[in-house]
Image (tube, rainbow, N blue to C red; front, side):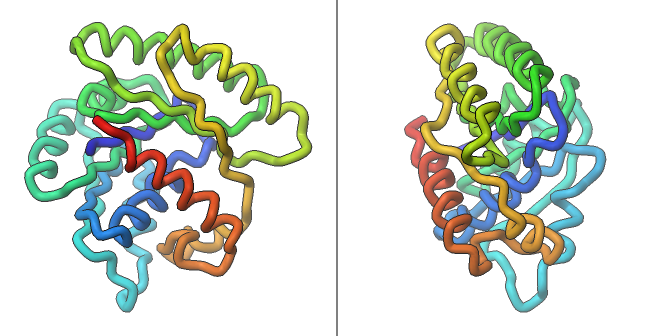
Amino acid sequence: MKITILSWKGGVGKSTIAQNLLVYSAMAGHSTALIDADNNKSSLSWYGYRPDDKPLPKSTVVGNTDKGSIVRMVQDLADNYENIIIDCPPIDSAVTTRALLAADICLIPIAPSGGGDLWATQGLFDHIQLMQEKIGRKIHVYVLINRFKPGINLHADYIKAMKEHEEEYDIKVLDFEINERISFGYANVEGLSVLEGTDQKAIKQFNHFAKTILGTKI
């Protein structure tokens, strides 16, 4: 399974989701590769800080920001890894488009903060729809409301606004959110996943999310 995680907006938790999904997949017994396609190399840096006494079985993190070779890398890694996760840069770029074309699943995290998120995401939906027409096959598109804060009307309104686009763009807005939790940050600076910590609410939320994504029938 090839999963591209992308957004045309920064600060949505894209890399954190990619890193935690890698850990979930590896802990579930799946050989998994994460491609860091972002120039800031945050996922590569995170992996480099992982403690030596906590190796991830059958997993790797590699970097590739080259639009000319990223599809080939995905194909090569697919010969040896069950799941490939691509952490894309937060911009509309050739690398992002190539990563999308290689995907079975496109995951779009949204961290509600204002109208700019809605407009950028709708533009991304248009782009994905065009790319699917170009390659002649379906890409399963999921929208995740990330860094959600219960009780804030703006965040609840985002969910409603996104769901209005489901039929038009043939996408799925996930029926659950991942809340804003400091435990994600604490785990990240140690090269770990929230799944390896003690925040049971965060663990429960992320497990439910990861199980849903990896359970998609391609």
